Image (tube, rainbow, N blue to C red; front, top):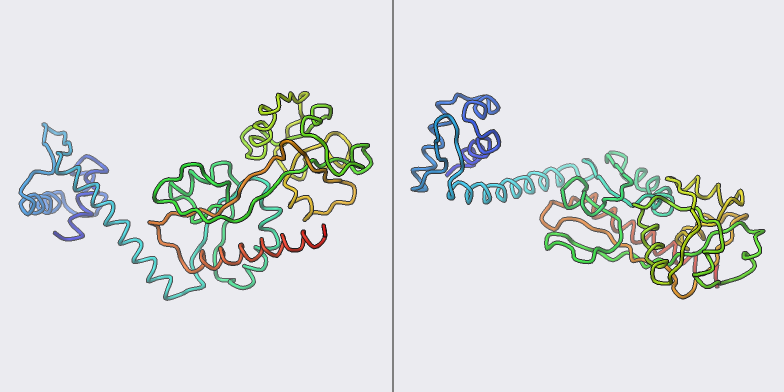
Length: 303
């Protein structure tokens, strides 16, 4: 059994048509049919049922297709690993993050990383579907909330625990308080991200827990517009405490929310069965170090 024969077989499975598969492979239909015949003779079972001009996978064909996909993945892993060893600093790295996290986690970090590895093509995409996109192989790494029941092929690396605080204009009467009960937010005009945003989901969960109803909140899609609305005194919003401390806006006060204090756990995710290059490993180390630095700086300023 040759690797090339498996590639031919997979191409036929994709097209479910011998002549179309032959065209895609830039070979003749007779050569393609002959290679499949060799495979069937070696295995001792037919791989396709021929029904007139149509074909369908047999049970043996289904087994071979499933196992072939695993072989293709391992070959891709080997090729990428060898390439990575050759150029180390080259290649690409695609990272998915939750909307809004770029301001805290990536703006300064990306500049440093690019200066250290200028040959690396780095893409950071804000998306509410970080987990699904990493699982689907669309992203090399993801920075997101800790999944409840991750698939076996997913690696979850804890990054940090973050609590949320109320962000409100500094001259608002509530700004004089260090902490307020969570239910007090129903007395305020709130501005929020859309319903698909992870922060909004955490807030709604706390609202359900306390029976809190928000008075027709203003919805926006960007952090900059959210902060602008708070600074203009249009409303208050709930954001990660670490983010608010990091931004350090003089005209925005951060107030602790109690009973409950909204929070979430953030992690790095990647697929165990997908090649993880040196660039991804170095980025994870840099991100973990950067988060420790931000948290230490925040703790010292609060102390």
